[in-house]
Amino acid sequence: MLKLLYQVLLVCWLPWVVVRLRWRARKEPEYGKRIAERFGHVPEGVPNRPIWFHTVSAGEAIAAAGLIRQLTEEFAEVPFLVTTMTPTGSAQVRQKLEDCVSHCYAPYDFRWGVKRFFDAVQPRLLVLMETELWPNMIDEASKREVPVLLVNARLSERSAKGYNRVKSLTRRMLAQLHFVACQYQNHAERFINIGVDPSRIGVLGSVKFDVELPLDHEEKARHLQATWGLGDRPVWIAGSTHSGEEQVVLAAHRLIREQHPDACLLLVPRHPARTDAVVTLTEQAGFSTQLMSAPAPQHPGANVASDVIDVIVGDTMGQLLYLYGVSEVAFIGGSLVPVGGHNPIEAAICGIPLLMGPETFNFPDVVAAFSDAGSLQLVYDAKELASGVTALFTDTAERKRRGAVASRVVADNTGATERLRELLRTEIHACT
Image 1 (cartoon, rainbow, N blue to C red):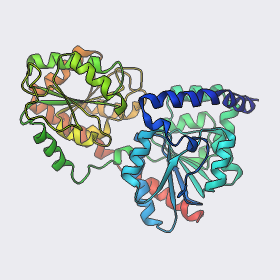
Image 2 (spheres, rainbow, N blue to C red; image 1 turned 90 degrees about the horizontal axis):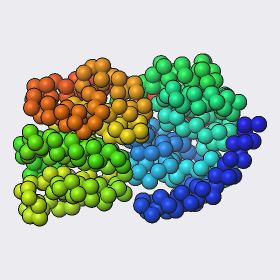
Image 3 (cartoon, rainbow, N blue to C red; image 1 turned 90 degrees about the vertical axis):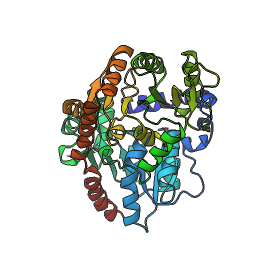
Image 4 (spheres, rainbow, N blue to C red; image 1 turned 60 degrees about the vertical axis):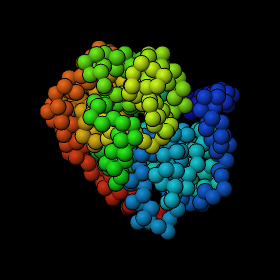
């Protein structure tokens, strides 16, 4: 019954999907492009019978990139396809993997679109990252005897409760999974509780801890610091911020500058399409502002009361790691608004202390690892955020200690990529 209801709801959802794509395209033009791909029309150049990785958005694409590249090198004779659902994910795949994989958007879960996609691509193996569970996609793979693996899997308590509300639909879908490789034991237990066969589940860790700094990281960070004339100025970053969060960050920056008048904020919205709105907020707050993509001005304060840049807004994709390298303290966005927080690991590998708001339900285990080790502090408002940053600017020894602890937490949790590679190597051999 629930399966039939799901198909009916999808039909009702279709007009809204089209309207939403057009609406989002007004602010993010990339959503208005390649729309046919979202309904199963495969572009030219996508190979037949590939190993198919589905990575949803930017975070999953970044996390999977190293693993996918290693596998493409080992299985050079086998084509690989990586799909995403968002333009930011698409950009990351093109940036990090364009030379070794094909890419397109995955179809929405309309049965006819999914069937059209499978007819055209005929994958040998489907690897889903994290929690991308779509009934029609998984059912179509099962009908065609395509093994489906869910890797780097995570399942929050809230999501588990949601799946339990539709048990008949969920259990059928989960029974079709070939294997589930979870990040943590408590996630594995939740998957078992909602219907995954215990013999088809394992705990391999999180590949996000295996992220590595680019070879040019230190050089480029120094270049950015010199380009913006930061010198010995105290610099902090608010990375991956969302609407409603920048106001809090800017209020905190004002308080920070009362004790550190030369402090500079690197403000990086999660979605570059929001850049204009963020710049407007910084200017309304009275701060001199510089876009990362714009040439550094000879006299940055020519039109404002200050003779230095107060806020640099990150408006280019793929630069966040370098910006963390320029910073002494990092606030991780999406955590002062009910978004659930973003991944703090990228900041941690740069050896800087971390601050987050209370909304961390996207990465509770990761946040707990850093918090328990003493490298991450939770803050609840502008005053607490400012106090946390100011204290770390003032106490150099404590700042360095917490940064070193953050790096150590990452080092202590590496290895998931290699464990997953062993698992996938076996599966790829079996289907080639």
